[in-house]
Image (cartoon, rainbow, N blue to C red):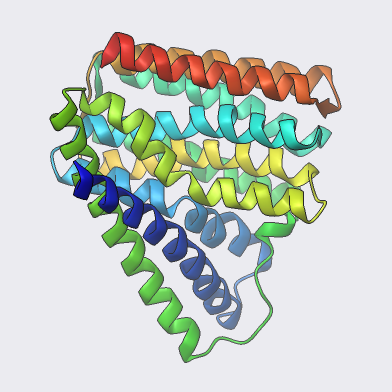
Length: 309
């Protein structure tokens, strides 16, 4: 148990550092190849910040741990909208960008509903995965045509690409892949040792570990006084997790899941609807509303352990 706990901590650090280095190297490489900044922001950087979720989800799927795979995506979204979005609002009220955030949060409600439909037979098939990923492609096309410029974090560096960046690209990807495998195996060992289900360990411990990049981005935005960026980044990450991460993983390996998936996804749907309502009714996510989101996330974790553990 002690060693597995240490391995989880090492894996989380590896995922964090690896994702950061991968984003930097890949962004500079794309610039060198003449890829437009918008495309870089919507693809390379978006994938980079969700690289831990993707690596863990795919590794768990290929390792015969489909519950961990799907639970990581659902749990990461719950944590992003609860602890991270709510926690940032607790520190400082978040102004809400009317167009981008409301469009993305509405899409997130739709993608969560789609996920529920996909999970109705407790299986995410290859066809389901392709449908999810196809919706993501359509979403990116809409954003590109709308001429979205992205947020401050999405702007790639203008520095030239060099050998150091190649090392960042390869080394960062290696850290993400290695950290993902270590996190999955260690988390499953902990689940077996304490007698809780793989779904619960995936939706809590694993999800928290893979959400480190989103947490770091939100904290950095608040420290730099760009608090309005956080909400859009978090909601956008949730959309990418559901459509891109889970979609690609299921396309590679079909994912049967436990019945607990329905209940947790229903909770996620309720949370996304609540967040969307808050975005639509206010131009500011207040500290009180942030506290409510954090409390709901805490309640969800307790229920997961009590009901599905």
